[in-house]
Length: 364
Ligand SMILES: Cc1cc2nc3c(=O)[nH]c(=O)nc-3n(C[C@H](O)[C@H](O)[C@H](O)COP(=O)(O)OP(=O)(O)OC[C@H]3O[C@@H](n4cnc5c(N)ncnc54)[C@H](O)[C@@H]3O)c2cc1C
Image (cartoon, rainbow, N blue to C red; front, side, top):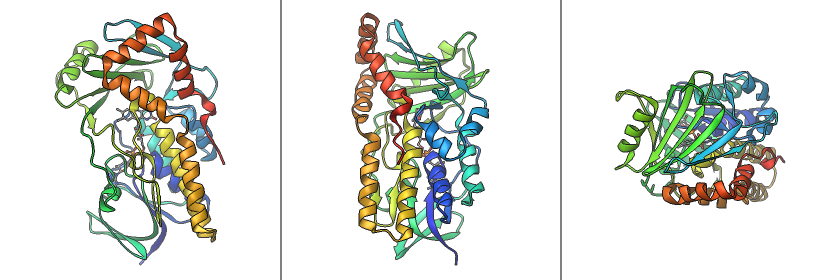
């Protein structure tokens, strides 16, 4: 029976980053994901500039720049009545880009594998038990054993569910996402458009494709889909990926021999486009903590240090997330912000700069 140092359930940005950093620290990580990579994922595909330092530490920044992507120069906020305000994004080298998750996540998981992580794809975790070490059961019948367990399996975390930690989801909203042909003259911009029944996010991901996201409530999402069909000349049989919930309470991140990272721990409002950063950074923090525990450092002190660093990652940012959520849950209010910003763009500029500023990353 092979006993892994760390078993990581989920190979998205959180799980892959954590596995890569664990492997760099000399540990033997296992990653289990139910999907076969490369795979798409419901996401706006925008990479916040704060990701760059982490990608540097993973040795991946250049490789990400080599992927087909779009450099995003501005963000346009459009009110329900069609009035809009456009703000420039910082045009630094490490700027905000958009890149398809199939490409980005595949690069991350391949890096984890290259560094020594044992990556098992198309395996769904179906059961967990703990008797000292963790026993992980899967749909294929394979059983894995590990000393530490990481839940990196997204907003509907199976690990949190089996540990009785998954909060009841507020099924208040649902998101649809598709890659569609890039409309002529769209430009290198993000569009955040308030609609009567929700909102839409749009960003070019390469020279020919647009990432289109729609966020609404279950009863209204079909109206939003019809709006998108008219707006972008899509056929009624356009395929959409879907995900819910968009909001739920957080799961405590650090437990004894168990961590939750990325969306499994905390779901942020997609409107701000920061989820990938939090996923990667929390993966790095968990890997650092686990490496210290394996090195023999005092476990309690390490967990406290992790909790502080984890809280620091969100410090001063959750209120923006809450504000964004308030604005998008009531699109009339969001539209009011757009109208106000047309008169005085100061506040919207400040919020946007805070979100996309490359210096928010806290390295250790
Ligand atoms: C509409 C929308 C738009 C968004 N836009 C952006 C954006 O533009 N920029 C941004 O930074 N963030 C955005 N986000 C958020 C971002 O997508 C997430 O924060 C990010 O994907 C979290 O990464 P993760 O690794 O924690 O989880 P995920 O990326 O969800 O990865 C979890 C992995 O776990 C695997 N898994 C799940 N259950 C099991 C199981 N039982 N067994 C095995 N494997 C399992 C899944 O297959 C998956 O690969 C958006 C989110 C939404 C909903």
